[in-house]
Structure formats: structure tokens, C-alpha cells
Image (cartoon, one colour):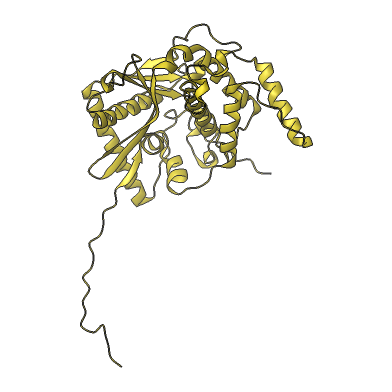
Amino acid sequence: MTKPFKGISVPLSNNTVVKRRYSVTQDVVSFRRCARQYGAFNVHKYAPAQQTQTYFGTIIHQVLDRCHAHYHGIVDPSNKGLLPDNGLTLSEEEIRDYFNEVKGAQKTGEAVPSPPSDIIRYFIQVENGLNSKGILAIRSDTRVQAVKILQYFNALEGPTLYPRVKDTEHRLQADQTNHVLHGVVDLLVDISDENLDPANCEMWDYKGSSRVGLKPKDLETYEFQMRVYAYLYQRKHGVLPRKAVLYFLNELDGSTCPSKRPVNALVEVSIEPSEIQVAINEFTKTVNQIEQSRCTNKWEAPAPGDISEQDCKSCDLRWYCKTPNGGKGVKPIYP
């Protein structure tokens, strides 16, 4: 029998270096907050039993994105220039009553009542999408609180902010030496209604939390995030943005819509070139730490006090971690 491949030599191919994509929030910020959570849920892809934090932040962002689309007539041109619900708000009792009516109709198989407002309609659309992915609100109060905050923001900030929004979910990325850095800015806001000038744009990022009571380390992380965004913005547009702004939406929470913006709701982040360079150096350092942890498969929990107790309280790993309760851990409860 002949040997057709005898004498044939096939050279070995060179190993291809694959650059990982690292997100500002999903990777670097998550790792800096808690490497143990990051390793379990981002790297090993374990499914968390509860995703309350994901639920609240995502629903706030996506509903507001629909509010901007509503005002600019992207979905329905007849709405162009109009605020959702014309800036009107429902009371907490009215919101809760509607959700109870929907729950009752679903139990009996009756027709589900139509949403009483644009905000609630957008809320239901987003929530249905999240529920299909297993991301649920653990408490009914969380749903009511989210709708209230969305209404208040729409009524308070919508008239002056929406006309200035030039882009939402603005995607940015840059090819670094060993990785690809990428992120998404919630809003690009121009200082005027004229044509978009990158040098006159402000970057806005929504935070579904309160400024009051925020740990200094968490604020530093948010500032770090905005400085990395500023770097990516400059790489894409050739200039730095005019401002970098954090908006803490939970500062709007209350029984009624505030008549003016709460003093702690908006924080402007300094984006001096030297500060941006420090942030990029820190980003690269964190990526190297992630790569090292991947090699060793060691994902250390933060020191007690470096992460909020609320984050620990909703973490599935809290039973086997010494960080919660000021370093005392959580005592396992068995049936």
C-alpha cells in the first residue's frame, strides 16, 4: 500500500495571541469592587441566585434610554419634542395599585390592564426582557421605587436635559498593547442645540444609588470610570469632553417629585490629563491582576469595609466569606 503523505512536513503554526476585551464596568470596576464575585460570576460564569443590583441598575438605564428615544421621536415621530407623560407623575399608591391589578389579572387569566403612563409602559417592556433572562425584582417595593425615580427624573430633568442629548449608549473602545479597552457612556449631552461638536459635549453616567452614604472607595471607582471614558472619548473624537458628570438617581427618591434638583444628585468629575493618565495606568494594572488571577485561579475577597455591606448582603458567596459584617462573616443557616 502506498504512503501518499510520506516525506511531507507540515510546519507548526505560531501561537496566535488573542487580546481579551476588558469592559470598564463589567470587568475592571467589578474586579476592583470584589475579585471573588468577579471570578465566580464573570470568569467561571456561575449563575447568581439573586440579581437585585443588576435588575435595578439595568431597568433605570434602559427605561431612561426609551425616554430619550420618545422625546426625539425615534420610535414614534409624532412624539418628537414631547416628554413622556408630558412630565406628569403618578402617586406611589397609584403605581402600587396598578401593579396589584396586573398581578390579580395574571392569576385569574383576565386581560391585563393597559399601563396608565408612558413611564410604566416602558418599565414593563424592559422588565419583561429582564425577567426572560432570570433577572427579577426580589421585592415589590423595588419596582415601585424604580418607577417613582424614573417619573421624577423625567419631570425634573427632562425639559432641559432631553433637548441637549445627542447620543445614548455611546460606545467607545481602544486597542491597547495586550488587551482591548471598551466602555459605554450613558449620555452625550451638548451645551447647545446646534450641530454636535465633540469639544462641547458632556459625558453623563447614571448611577442607581444615592450620593449620601456612598463609601469613599466607591466614589473613587466611579471617578476612575469616568476618567477612563474620557480617555476613550479622546481616542475616538480627538478631544476631551467638556465635562464628566455622575447623576445619582436615588437622591430623587421620596414621597413626591422634588421641585428642584437635590444638591447631592449631580457630581462633576475632574478630567485633567494627569488624572486620566493615572486612571489608565490603574486600568492596565487591574487587567494584569485579572490575568494573574486567571492563571492562579485565586480570587480574593476585599478587606472588610472596602465593600458596602449591601453588596455583601445580596451576594451568594456571603456564607463562605469573612468580609461581611465587618469581618465576622455570615453564619450559615441550615434547615
